[in-house]
Image (cartoon, rainbow, N blue to C red):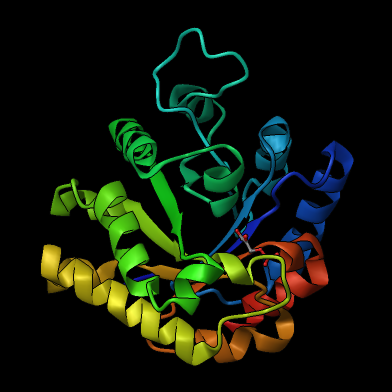
Amino acid sequence: MRQKIVAGNWKMNNDKDATKKLIKQLRKSTKKLSLKNTRVIVAPTFVNLSAAIKRAKKSKIEVVAQNMHQAKNGAFTGEISAEMLKSIGVKTVILGHSERRTYFGETDALLAEKVNAVLENKLETIFCFGELLEDRKSENHFAVVESQLKNGLFHLEASAWKHIVLAYEPVWAIGTGETASPEQAQEMHAFIRSIIEKQYNKDVADNVSILYGGSVKPANAEEIFSKPDVDGGLIGGAALKAEDFTAIIKAI
Ligand code: 13P
């Protein structure tokens, strides 16, 4: 059975004190929740991962990284490797966020290399993708998403898919306050599952968790999560407030 996941991508927010405070609040607010088959994840910035992991110990909160370099080690100033992340207790890495693709030029080909590095290191990835506004306006959104998945992930063996979580984040809905409607999210998630089934098999398609991301808030989370192919959310802005993030966790 596929897992439900509520993940908070903190992006470049929260210094060390704010990180500790937010983890503490979430520890408390999730303590009594019965989270059957449901994972709660937060992704602080690299420098605060250790502090967050320490504070999240023996809680219901998993701490993951927002990015990773594809090489094992070497002359890559400013970068972070899988081994470094593993050595501080990180087990999951977000890859392919649209902000990485747009502002840091991450291509499908580069992301395929990063995915390989994640798997070689026995880590898991939350792999993000999604179309631009112009793609949707020109009705190219299905083709764009299909090519992102094909180029980033479809070289993998079926067995690798147990280490993959997908996050569909239409770029026009990120940080804009404009959400895909629950129907638009469902339509795309069902499409994603159908192309995975075609490429692999029904088992892989049925078991991969597909998260929706883009302006998920306490007010719209329940309706989005109620859709059969939406297994949770990747939350930006609303993940920075314990109260809002907790409300979104409760919505699942
Ligand atoms: P917002 O929830 O702020 O729209 O951000 C979504 C996102 O980019 C999560 O990765």
